Amino acid sequence: RGLLMLGRLLRRFRRAIPPFDPRWQSVLEPNFEHWRMLDAAERVRMEALVTSFFHRTRWEAARGFDLSDDIRVLISAQATMLLLGLEIDDYAQVSSVIVHPSTVHLHGEHAVGGGLRRSGTQTLAGQAHYRGPVVLSWAAARRGARFPAGGQNVVYHEFAHQLDMLDGITDGTPPLGDEAARARWVEVCTQAYDSVRAEGSPVLRPYAGTNPAEFFAVATEVFFNRPLEVCEHEPALYAELRAFYRQDPAARVRRYAELHPELTADQPQH
Image (cartoon, rainbow, N blue to C red; front, side, top):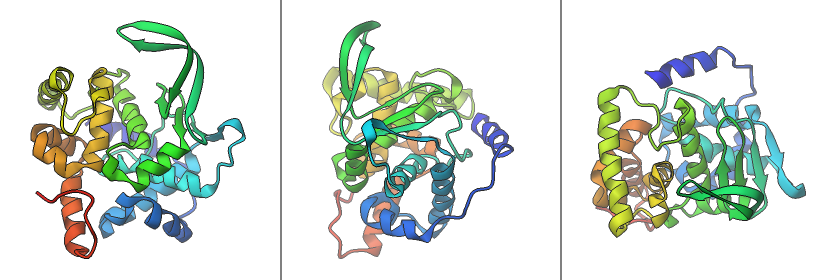
């Protein structure tokens, strides 16, 4: 309900934007694996989301980087994949998207976990700020779009943080429909989070055990990138993510494999 009300409010303040540029297909088809798996209805919705994000986002190029339209389109598609099944159409709370050519080096004081902070240079692939910018490495964003079997996608990760922040708290629990849904989410995610920290996971990388917020972001990455394996190893977690995102990436992968049996699937079929 919260997402629905927020979406209605944001739509009141929309400004007209151009339609989806057909030339963008030549960017997305070969470079974004998940774009090729969309069905006709999903493609229509995604074209609208990509167009809106592309034109309404304030883009900033770091260190003199040549931030082309092709780069912005590919990042836009990945960011809005998370919105495909939701009742909101944009990330109105994001002030800008800052794109670095490769690894991001941030200087100054930063959190290191456990409430501790450290001064120095921080090396990362992306960073999300509450009511602020999203910082991305283009090298990482491009790699995540083309090779989902690796499990990581920095754009999914950082924009999952933005969804988590919609209720003003970065705690790994995005806005949910009701208290029962929230209680179920907390129970399932806490169990999976504790398991990662205690014994690891065959599908969630160790970084998921950093804190609940990072758990949600990492879980989002593998939900979209390795859905069949999440179904197998973390079925309860997959069910919660499917209910929240209102998407079923595992069904999408299976459908795509059936339509294209000549292609070698990135993931084993279960």
